[in-house]
Image 1 (cartoon, one colour):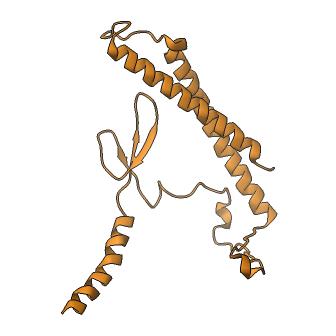
Image 2 (cartoon, rainbow, N blue to C red; image 1 turned 135 degrees about the horizontal axis):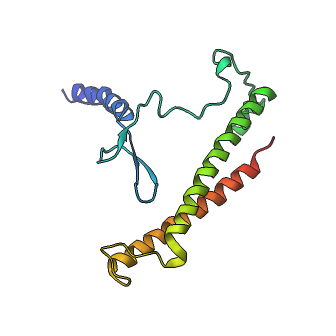
Image 3 (cartoon, helix red, strand yellow; image 1 turned 90 degrees about the horizontal axis):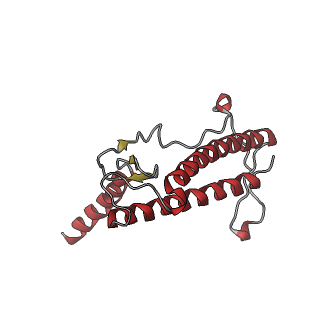
Length: 169
């Protein structure tokens, strides 16, 4: 009897694990900061992602070759525990070009959000809202959040520029 329960548990466990792998995913964009958050819990303003299309890989620019095979060679050094995969140079150039294009677009978006954050931050003295006094706790909290958002966008711009400088063309 105990063996039957244990066997049923062993069979059910992978099924439960695979069911959780297909959990719903939601994308929430904070209306104030523009920060994007992906979560498995629904919330007001979040949109449900479609796993088959919304969560796919970044396009590589070679959709015409979708059925083509990629040559993969493994290193002969099996003791190292690693395998090296290679693709032809044309495919790699196409991938690098697409990657560069995506990064340039992301950089432009981040720079726009950085400029907006700088404008809102106003050198540490944002304009008070109608329901805030200049030194009120609500104003101070909003000022801190604007500072945090500004620093976040500065880091993102710096990271994107660094990533773009690392791309070989």
